[in-house]
Image (cartoon, rainbow, N blue to C red; front, side):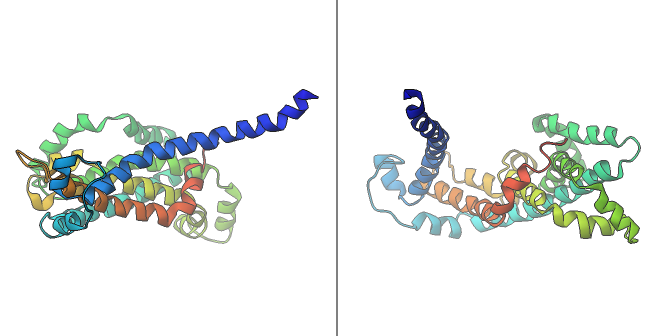
Length: 283
């Protein structure tokens, strides 16, 4: 009888464990973000006198005004948009076509082609820097936005192909057969039948790719030289002088740089979780 009486309480205690773990994870994740937001509202004099996160002094938007007016943040943000949007669209589009071809059309040597594309996931980006730098320098593309667009588009095909291939394998073959019977070609079947079903997977891929590319620091640092070609992540580093660091302006730029990725996630959040698990069982 005692075991029966204790069972509901034990079940409730066990059910609270995941919630407490998620709450602890949220606190660990949010504290640095709130710290950066708080630092962005403090003056450099206050930061120098009391520290980054010390609760002292008055708060204001001067750092944001300085970042937008004199820090070149607008140029950096525009460069990030010009790199991220086309690279995201190209990688998702090419990965979708490759995944559809491998999973649905099943061409000869399709699995070998898929393995070749997926092998890109195991190539560390750092080992490609020297040959890519030499290639872009020889073709006159160095210190432009094209190297980042090309590299991110090509590198993202591996992940996009993997996700879309797994998703398309979960699509019933009868849908494609019905389209063929009605006289639709493969482009029409893909556009009108399959892609509407793939919206969750496409939303998840677009969110992930946008975030990865937007937050990239390595390639813009290596493939650009002039300040007018910097992206926002490298632009934040530009606020660090030889003898001092504008922590307040850097924090303000970091907050501004995070807004587009937050907006993208909010826009696609209802599809994001479903897209991440799409095709996870079959593969």
